[in-house]
Image (cartoon, rainbow, N blue to C red):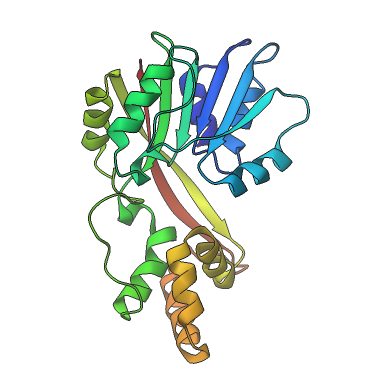
Length: 245
């Protein structure tokens, strides 16, 4: 999926590429290989801890700048100075994604692309949904509320409309299917608690008996995805959207 995002911005030697909400930086690092010689990757995230982790993972042979960027505020990068922007699963988490996209467009050169990913619907992504549904059905987690979140842009029309309103032209959206893989049900549960603070906080409140019941229910839900060696392969789907400034 990250490779598809990078393909959509077509990095070239000498380009400056910005990876927004980069997390551990993996998507941008793929692009960095393609902009050498002479190119610069800017790896950014709101969380300093993420930037520190990305610095540790950065390949030694590429030019990477690390920058803390809050997408709720103006981006501190010169206007019309960037050749391409990547953002994997970031904009749909924002209170004002249109503002962030306007800022993205401002720093892009004329006709330069942005490529973003946003999750499709919950039923396409049971790898993240099923643990939450089990907790919600037991009253351990509150129901999902409207607003920013994993599935805020499940409707591709919302992505296209927001990009167009922010001034981007010719938005193009495609679905990309892949799989999430886990060693077993316990690995799946641990992965979700590491990925979601909401799930982690709920897990911390569970007593031994309740956690055992939750894991037993999760194991039952995992049956359609369970392999002969007890590993899990669960389908996932995301939108990849591209437009030009």
